[in-house]
Image (cartoon, rainbow, N blue to C red; front, top):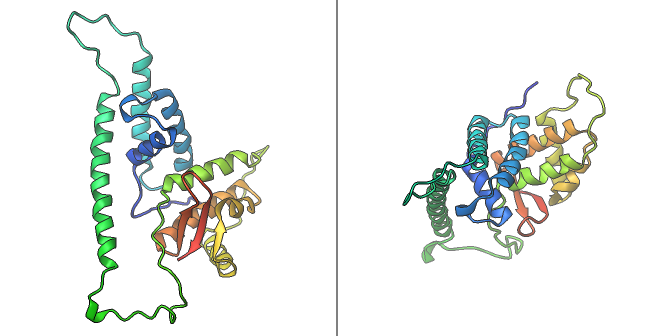
Length: 238
């Protein structure tokens, strides 16, 4: 049976491209097309295998990246005097810069909203720290969907590939794995994403469990946090 996942705040293809540029520590104005296109296609394999809603937009951008890469490999005609060479990446760079500006503004607005939620009128502030168990407020996760997918991609790459293809019924459902994750979080307050996935006996179980985790994130049942930039990813009970 197909597993289609729809996330209300699903990051789009430009988000993925910006993520890869940041991860590779390269300039937007000088994108290494061969390297970035290869990384993008690796993520696209995961997106299409999970049947994520909106995968068509990712495929469209993949075609654009491949076209730009091909244009940069083709021999260029001689330029006339005073004529400047056109960079095939120019339009893509413009789109990325525009998108990045809008995203930064949206992030700033979201930060202001979060800040306002922490402000209370003095006359109505009646918070008993001890009665609340002395727990501290924790900021929301800054882990993106692509951070999570990048870790999942590495786990799948390390998992032993099936030596032969056998058509069989999937032994677990998304809801069963959602319940499994929730039960594990009843025992421990947080789970290491890598350790959780490595407990799955087959690649298909990994995929279904990953989809279950995405569904839990959408429902607000768990938070995803990271120990540092590209560090270990933890699953915490919301």
